[in-house]
Length: 166
Image 1: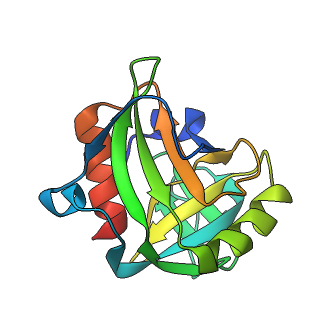
Image 2: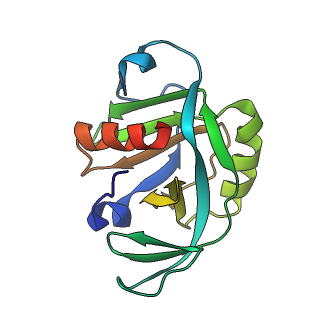
């Protein structure tokens, strides 16, 4: 799995986006050229971040090592194994973003949770490893999730998308 640099985690956004988000969609793999669901090879856990301790702090079952410290996390709000769509796109500001479209059965759960936790971090965990812990910028009610950063390159965005889906 990919560990992203600490500087990215500090400024990442987890924000709602519309069905017609601006930018040019770029598939994450040849398989993404087709429309339809993408099955993650390993369940994706979304775990609320309780605190971030300095690097080298003691770890345990609810502590995940990140590049910039040890993330103390709450239990997962759910395991996500299927996405309606996964892709990357260049943003209007020149950075890159990962776009995830949740299936209808996950959309309501995610909408309810994000509406109560705006301004908090949510760890994206795959196979017990912290991939990234973006900040929730607004309630995500339509199931369209965008993780973006002006520092993301196309390669960084593609690598993160591949890590999420396996």
